[in-house]
Length: 264
Image 1 (tube, rainbow, N blue to C red):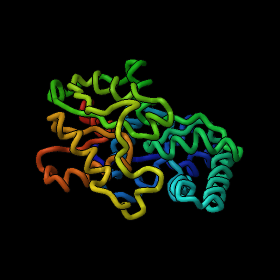
Image 2 (image 1 turned 90 degrees about the vertical axis):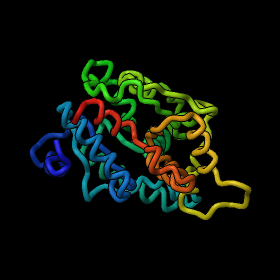
Image 3 (image 1 turned 60 degrees about the horizontal axis):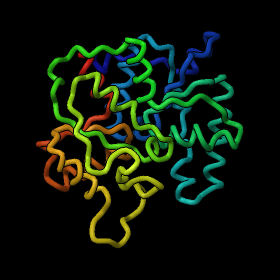
Image 4 (image 1 turned 30 degrees about the vertical axis):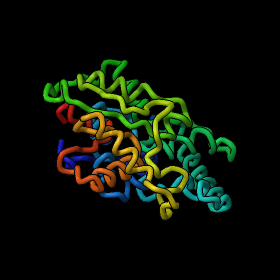
């Protein structure tokens, strides 16, 4: 299935037919606008279509969740954005949201309920783990077996929501060898972009966080760094460029690894 063949259903079209899909796939700002993370959006959409999941996207109706605004201290802007999103989601009678961004996941799950937005929120690693348990994901690409990888825990999945196992279970199912970094799971080092740090200049110090984290990943000897967050992917990719390793080491999202393992 090529990217050109992807026919992703749009919520307005589906709703006009008199039905609400089981899942809303919330693409997120990075998934919609960042050239690198658009590939992750396509990869996950491929998986959803391959599994015949009943889903749709908001398309042009999707707006930022307001997470960066709140983290940067602009509470009024955050609430305006959140209330607008809640109005849209409730108009479509959305009950379940799948997101490929831990920042979107965290704010939908833990902060939108305060404003009346109550939904079942699922990160794509959690959804894929569920599909694995239902025997709907079966690796067919033997080339992935024994590949050395290292997995970076996103802060907003790990420490913020105590989710460490889904991505690792998916990697185990592919047959790859996951070499843990020196600091991992609850002790994992941030990529350096959380808390709206992505959008500001670095503060004084002897080394930027993304460089330190990239160095820890390179220490494992793995040639593939696996992430599950657009912020983390941006920072790790920048780190590889900074260390002149972008030709030797690749950075994939877990969805892209699944697409490879399924041979899609």
